[in-house]
Image 1 (cartoon, helix red, strand yellow):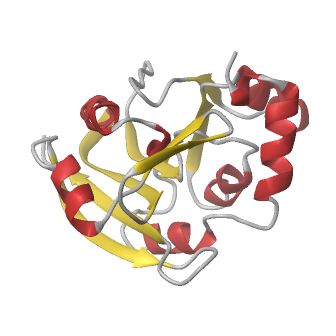
Image 2 (image 1 turned 180 degrees about the horizontal axis):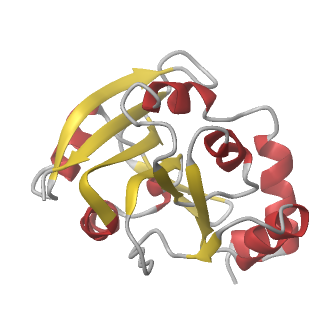
Length: 189
């Protein structure tokens, strides 16, 4: 059983992530996405970013951890949530945008490309995808979790030929100067 599939792992992660959110990412997204648009968040975890997105958009939260989904649903019974694996996300509807904050870096580079291909198929015409990653090179495993790091070049390579064009690709600071990278993509399919 994986880290995020146990109460202990979910509790540890929730504590560790306190004080961090994607507010600046969501603010940037707002320059490109009309209020009221439909957004699927991949890997919502405790739901901090989902709550921020819900202020402006019609949101669907997803995670591959039933523990995260059950915890969020207990305090947000009206929430639209789906159990989805980011490796091959399949949902029975389409969205204007797919968003994730430091989720896809847990996938191998091949899994991430496959995820982008599947995401493209979940988007409406001219749909957007916005994702963030830790910046760097290589990969490592911590607490049983894989972390794949991306630079501007390796992220652009991973996105090539997935049916997306890059709208914005830039670094930002989360814990240390320029330790993170975000990409805003537009579907060309």
